[in-house]
Length: 274
Image 1 (tube, helix red, strand yellow):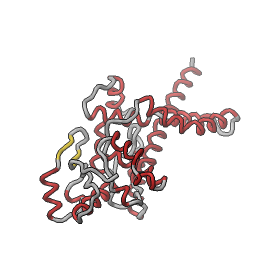
Image 2 (cartoon, rainbow, N blue to C red; image 1 turned 45 degrees about the vertical axis):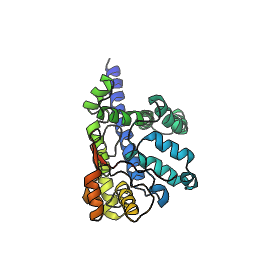
Image 3 (cartoon, rainbow, N blue to C red; image 1 turned 60 degrees about the horizontal axis):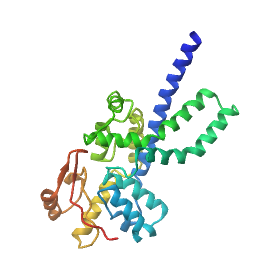
């Protein structure tokens, strides 16, 4: 009986460690790619307000096709700030996409476990972390679903409210400022990730201005100079976030609206050049 109790306690402890690892990895990955700048100016001046429109752009636009692979990845990754919802895939599709990517990792980890190349108490939480991580986008979009008062499982709501899964209010803050709350599993590792983010800004690895704010400011500047690039949204941006002249400030005042679901301010879209 004591042995069974110990096994249960060990399993629970390893599960909690796995959840923390999954959250930490999600936060560090999110922090990294949110703060990389799309080098292709023409590409980063394209903005879309629904994931479906963004997907069509990626499939048909010569601007996108001519960009480097890394710029394509960054643009797709960061355009979520402009088009946060709805997802273009089902929950199963989002899970399968990440799980497929993780298959080689699982093969390696199970090999390490089978051949006893590392202690089981070290390998097992890592395996569980990757297993839990395959649900990352599902957990992420469930936060967006609840922010919009759409139907959501009572169990999911309970897990969000008790801190075991990403809470919508925690993630909403990220979509307001883009410089905090990077973790996507439950936020447990956020204190460490925030310290890493501050360090990166302090030593100059990352800019003090998140790329999303920079892109929006740049799009406004292009429009004011008479260019054809879309003005882009100013989601979550105050006038202080966007260095612009009086003409731009008047536009912000007169044309902006509020998307209360994510607490974000945005401009009506201007059709981009394909």
